[in-house]
Length: 169
Image (cartoon, rainbow, N blue to C red; front, side, top):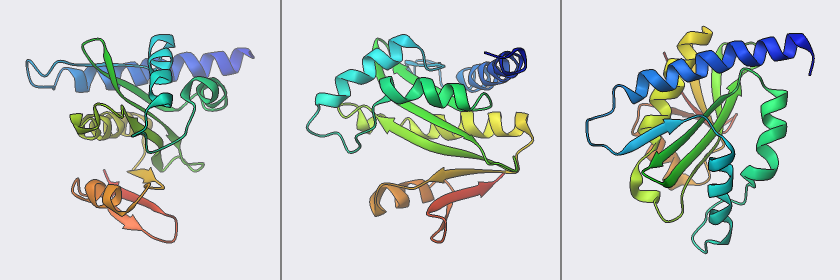
C-alpha cells in the first residue's frame, strides 16, 4: 500500500469513526443497537445470511468488501448489531465529483429485517457526508418498488434516470 493511500485510509477512517460515534450517542437509551465499522466479525456473521431462504440479495460481503475497501478509502461503511446479532451492513462511497455520498449496498439480516436499521444508516451517512463536504446523500438502485417507497418515507426523492433516491443536506 502506498504511503499516500495509507494516509488517506487513516484520515477517512477517523472521520467514519467520528460519524458513527456521533450517531451512536444519539440513539435512544436501551435501543440495544451497537454501531461499528465493518470488521472480520461482521463479515463472518454475514456469511450466515447466505444460506437464508428469505434473503433478497446475493452479495458476498466476505468476498467483495476487501476490494471495495481498498479501492475507496473515502468509503462509508457501517455494521449495525443488536447484542451479538448482526442486523445490517451498508457500504457506499462519494460520487466522483464529491458532491454526494452514495449508499451502494445495504442489507438487513434476513431474520432481523424488521429491525429498521435504515434510519440509523441514513443518519450516519448524513453525518459522514457533511464531514466530507458533500451536499446530498443517495441510495443507489433500490431493489424493488416496496423498498423504494420505504426509502421515500425518509424524505428521499427517486430519480428514475439514474435509478437512485436522494436528499439534500
